[in-house]
Length: 489
Image (tube, rainbow, N blue to C red; front, side, top):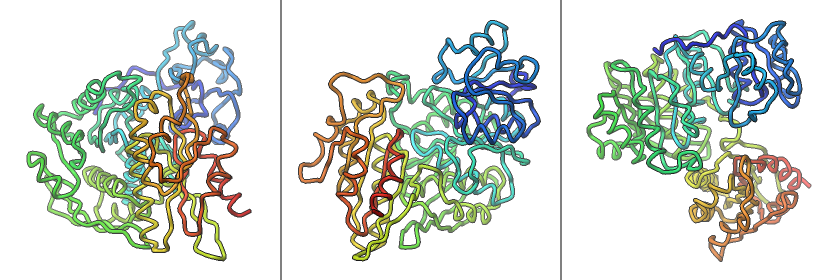
């Protein structure tokens, strides 16, 4: 276990308390009877929930908000990326000498004293973390958790549990995962991303090596996907440094890395009209071989692998394998991860289904479109896959334009919106045309710079039985409801 961090959490003030990650940790503190205050630019459901738990929240940022509890906070939490340095509350906190920490610092402090299960990787962190929580809840372990997305069934992204375990998503994008000290760490995969922060692929991979070094010495485990060569290589390097390393994936992948014990072997996988069906063999240290079979409501080989990782991590934490498998079967997904948004019936044919996904890297787009293809082929109704994609960040789009084009070509037709810049300023002369110009000439592709016209573009491409996917980390998620409305019309 990690040593206690030097933060006094008696009274904690959050600048930007309504944010997804911030509100979740604020709820955990409130559940632990800490005094919670905060501010945000607007009212919201997370703010209302926190107020119902006794938190005091101001709308608008002002220096006097530090006194919402009647006395100044013992610690202030902020997002250095989202909150400017001239924020009046941040300025006032520094002026008074109140400790100011990041969300990741607070999460590390909240995990002290628990069995820490951290899920990391370039892709699949949120889904794998969520599956782990679902499995452990079904097994009666009631873990505390903090997730980047919102569990569909639980309706929340954070919880203060009664169990020994704390399950959390470990974000590598700004190296904040290095603040944690995992007892069980999972790396789902690794490939260069966030190069605006890391600058080089080598620096990006190094952060995972450093994360592996933080696994509890002697008793902790690093669990890596052996179907991903970079994750397996991280595991090999960690093994050489004396870290306890376990692998998961197909038996064929396990044969490539015989030095890493194959703890979770995927021995069966198929899809039919009822969903995915998975069979796993578990060989955990100190335990007899166990077998698990379960269904998955979310399609795709990547989701199958995520479920094997979740099963292995949860079993290492002491969960009953049969109950854990039931929890995976009951897992209904995470908001914006192949999330079903609705279906529209046509008299002349089968329904059109609309899904929404957060995929914003070429590998993620590839995985979600392959999953969509599996789903329509399993339905056997001749449906096609229609993608509505919004690139996220100019830097990522320029770095991976050819890869995005190749990924989107897995759809039968596509509408590509212009780039969602998020924290980045526009780059002169750069639009999503650098993607669409590289897509197959015989494919139906619409480059649509007008966001308000995109839903109509999608509907113009749709046939009965098709599966429509809105894809991206930006505002494209808003189009799913509009597409459904236009289809109904």
